[in-house]
Image 1 (cartoon, chains in turn purple, green):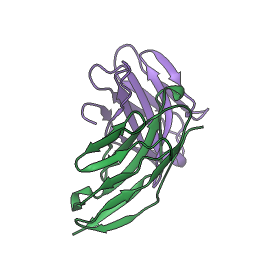
Image 2 (tube, chains in turn yellow, orange):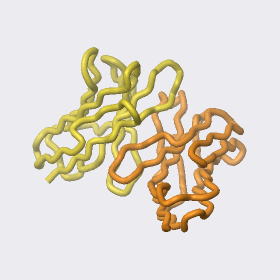
Image 3 (cartoon, rainbow over the protein chains, first blue to last red):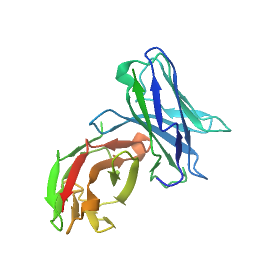
Image 4 (tube, chains in turn brown, purple):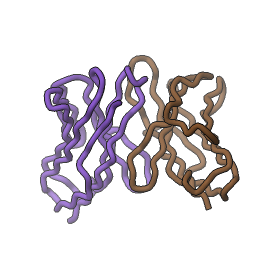
Length: 114
Length: 113
């Protein structure tokens, strides 16, 4: 997971607030993936992005969740009007996108909704 | 769709014991297979991988062989240490799925001195 940066590492929100999670991929990587890990569970795919494009969002909840990966700057996972069930660890991973498919993970953002 | 099944934990072992974590998968085509390890409070680290049938991935004394005939990728280590205590995740990815990873539920391993 060297090189993938996520912030904040911990985020506390009250119900109804917005959460913004940031991910900076490894240098030279143009593909970003977001995964969610609920307590005591495995990771579930949420969304796959390349610069300025959402490639696969089949794992994203239909409402309140959105993701972007702009031309400049980090990838953002945004959760609007958070609910207690959104409490989880959110991990970002990146890959080069050159046929090398290994994904390298960041340390995660642990979201707690009060 | 793709799926990964791995043995449930926790697995409790004594130091220097032999460790096996079973992993089987269902996938379209020929996926790549991975083992990731998660230490407490941290993200996932790639432990080893195999990209085609009969490949053996190895790292830090851990090994796993891609068995297409049994659709398995079991993780083994001959002599565990206390520092191997962690949660281990088996995963697969395939171009048909856009390279997204499908994970098993994770197996918690606790190694006692």
